[in-house]
Length: 460
Ligand SMILES: Nc1nc2c(ncn2[C@@H]2O[C@H](COP(=O)(O)OP(=O)(O)OP(=O)(O)O)[C@@H](O)[C@H]2O)c(=O)[nH]1
Ligand SMILES: [Mg+2]
Image 1 (tube, rainbow, N blue to C red):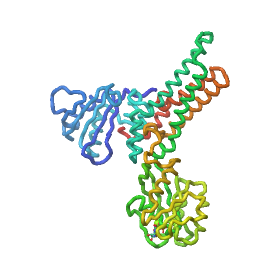
Image 2 (image 1 turned 180 degrees about the vertical axis):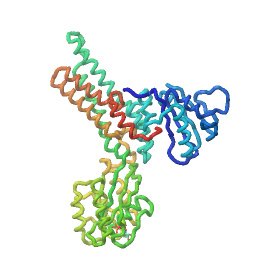
Image 3 (image 1 turned 90 degrees about the vertical axis):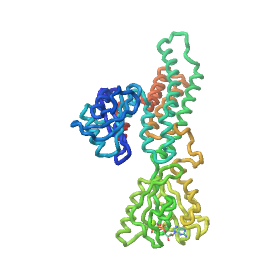
Image 4 (image 1 turned 90 degrees about the horizontal axis):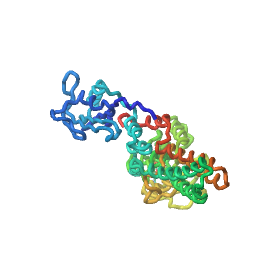
């Protein structure tokens, strides 16, 4: 894997905006030189590594821009494995832009998105699953997402994958020894032993794969569209789930016109709730637009919360609407049970229905459980994660790599079982090992790396 590691990169690493402190980070062979082009230490004593020096940041004319702190870490004992310098200035956007400009004039170039982390990966400081976890930590929206990303940053997933990969590699070495020296007395491992080892590896990979639905939703969240007829209580449901009076609620049917979106944490999942205009034929032009907007969101919704007014006499229209949502994951929220009672409605028996009152809060916790189960694919448990959190598979890339690994393992077992030549078994094993290597980054192409890191922000 090639990279332009000779160049020194620099970026503002703190968030854009006003803050107490703003940090400019440099990495590369000229990091210290470029930093000292703008930073003038207060003390004449020799600079010390991993020590905060105070001083002034000056422009080329010698005018002080800011009083600041500087710290440097010599490579390879640094986050990127290269010489790294951080300039801790005050957190003003204009100031930081000025200081960065001066640093760039002193020999650094602007870092690309994720380039610091990419260099850390290329220099063996992180495996790829850890590097990917950096962005997930930064973007985590719930405690659960954060704990999953933190676990991966600590290398939990990488270690598990490596363990399986090393096991397969051992088998491959035995098989290949036999291929190379067919007349050798060593008969490799006994067939049963190899089969057993393969099945053990398959179990681990399958277990990881099983966490994908949960892991992905925990990281990326889910879009839940609230639909129903006018006055069913959709906006009331939005408000009670958000625990704030976000949407206007009135007794007038047709109150909501626009789609109102808010993200709420439901059982650890970031859920984007979308409240919509009640579905009905209407002559009111604005309301009609609202109904169209509601319908247009169906396609992208992960879950539909269909709200029914349990006190209404005629559910015919609701049933027709529900019929139209047949290929969506639908939870029917049978609302207003405080006035209608939680009576069974036979017509709804084939739907996943929860009785609620958006007025009193009755049934809302059960509804949250259902939303979780609908999003993740298994019931909510108070300890939400089925796996140690770092071992959750959250990315499609990891899932595909694991599927490739599993496929190789299964084909190798089959080949061995029916007595196919060991060359074929070895080929399958190699494909499996490569699949696993894509997760940790040992067998990842430059293209894939670029794709991963271009999602980062600059300065990470
Ligand atoms: N008794 C009772 N009233 C409710 C309940 N939920 C909502 N309401 C009332 O029903 C009326 C309509 O509620 P909204 O939340 O505005 O209904 P909506 O589905 O958003 O209506 P549109 O925006 O017009 O489509 C209001 O008067 C609410 O106070 C409930 O659980 N019980
Ligand atoms: Mg409404």
